[in-house]
Image 1 (cartoon, one colour):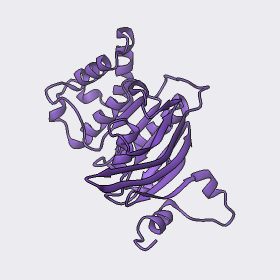
Image 2 (cartoon, helix red, strand yellow; image 1 turned 45 degrees about the vertical axis):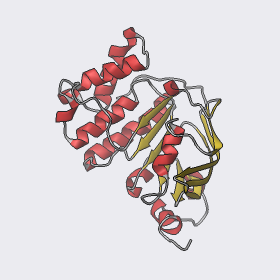
Image 3 (spheres, one colour; image 1 turned 180 degrees about the vertical axis):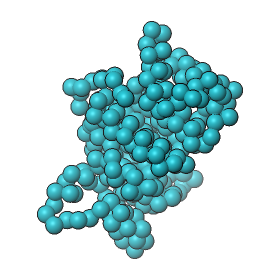
Length: 251
């Protein structure tokens, strides 16, 4: 499916140090700390209102933290937009443009060389199975298809850090499985680093390499999934960890 291979010898490093954020004097993030080395996929989980979207928006450079720092690929607190792809939970598009025109517009925004645009768009159309809708205006697509277009748009510029906010919400089971297989291939073949929030614990556990659980803006748990599974006699699943650290209000 994915033929383009990039940066195979590059180690991606995303580091968050003591992130704090308030809105209207209400704490939203309370000291988030983690270091993630790519290629990998960090599953970001927690109940509604935990601060997941705010964390993703800070990583994307759309919101500024009150204190703390974010570093990725040597950039501190000012991640280069051409290195970062952000797929928000609510699809963002220009409703009067067709799917193909959406991608052309985004390619121009990211100043992708003209000779590379056609190849890149064809890759995205194939990767997200958009052949049947490529000439349709996005406003006329189903919610699930709009989610696919949204994800494809975040990949137009071949980012090395991909931030996904509930990317498979409203997709059917087949489409969800396909998207996660795509993410696995992006990690393996393009060596990118992905941070993905999700409420579907079973689904996200199938592709995650790391797990970050937050509740009420506070970090409750962070681990490499391989480290967790290698503990002798430890049969904890991601659902068990979620119940322990995110669902229990007295924890």
